[in-house]
Amino acid sequence: MDWTKELPAAITICDVDGKIIYLNEKAAEVFKDDGGYKLLGQNLFACHSNESNEKIKLIIAEQKPNTYTIEKAGKKKLIYQTPWYENGKIKGLVEFSIEIPFEMPHHIRS
Image 1 (spheres, rainbow, N blue to C red):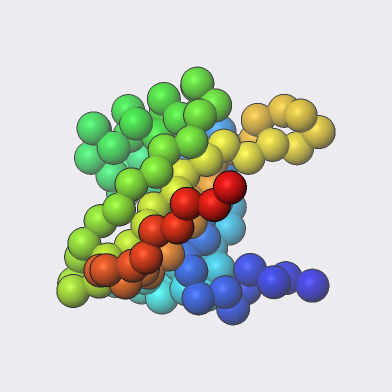
Image 2: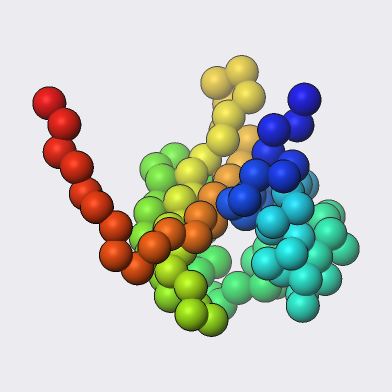
């Protein structure tokens, strides 16, 4: 069961060297102008600025997530980038890009 395939959030996964090893349907759609599924096997460092590349390398090196929001093409998105592991060993980075409302409730739960 590949529950991520049709999830309405873009999921991109790379290995520790930056090689893109997975895109779900939403990610392929988001990056269609850059090649969509043809990005598989390509290095994501070629797709980003030096500043972004340094941030990606830092996330992998420090093994700490990076979270922020962006606005692009009239949509607001939550970006969550985090290392992923296999048998306790870091294997790369996964990015979730989720469209969110411009105004949304915030709840504090106890």
